[in-house]
Image (cartoon, one colour):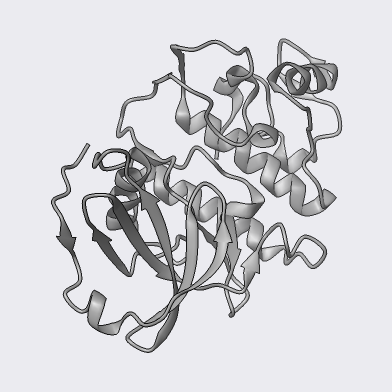
Amino acid sequence: MDHFADGDETSMWHQTTVDMKLIGEGVHRVYATLIDGKSCVKKQFVFDQGEVSEGFTREVNALRTLAHQHIVPLLAVSWQSLVGWVALPRYQHTLFEARMNIDPEWEGQLESAVSYAHDCGFTHRDLKPSNVMISFTGDAVLCDWDASVYTGDKLTEIRTNPICSLPYRAPELLWNQSDMEYDPYKLDLWSLGCVLWFMRLGKAPFEGHDEGSLLAVIMMAVDDVSRGTITGVPSDLTRFCNICPDQRTL
C-alpha cells in the first residue's frame, strides 16, 4: 500500500474549490463542487484513527494509472490526517438510473474499459450498474475503483471479506468461505456479464437475500455442470456468465 503524507497533489485544490453540496451518502459521502470552473464531484474517504483507508489507496492508485475514455479520470487528490478526497468529473446519471433507456453501444464501451484495466493489471471487483456512470455525451464510464486491486500477472487473490455487491458476485465467492483463493479477473468477467445482462432485462439476472440463496438461484439455472453453462443466458454473454471460472473470457 502506498504511503500518503498530508497534502495535495494539486496545488490549486483549495483555491479553486468552492462551496460543496452533498449529493450522495452511502459508504462514502459525495459532494458536488467546482474545480477550475468545471462541475465535478468530491468523494470523501474517512480515515480510522489517522490510518489512510484501503479504499482511498486503491482508488487513487488505480486512477493514477488507468487512462481510458470509458474509465473515470482522476482530477485531483487531497488528504489530511482524518480524511481523504478524490475529485472526479460529474456525470448525468448511473446506468441503474438509465435502465429504461439503454444504449446498446454501452456494452462494447464497458467491455473495452474492463479489458484495458485487465491489460494494465487492475481488477475492479465491484462491477454493477450503480458503478457505471452515463456522461452528458451519452457514453458509459466505469467508476468507483475503491475495491480494485492491482494483481499484475498474479492470477489469484485471497478473499478475506465479502467482495463485490451481492447480485453481481461470482458463484465461486458464494460458498461463504474466508481465506479462499479466487481469480479476480474471472470475478470481473462474471460481474461484467451480469451487468450487460441487466442492461437487457432491466434488473439483476440473479437475485438472493444472502450468499446461500443467491448461489442456489444460480445453481438451479445450470443446465450442464461439466460445461458450466446456465439456462437463459444470451448466447453472446455465455463467455462471461459461466459457473466455471476457467471458461470465462473477454
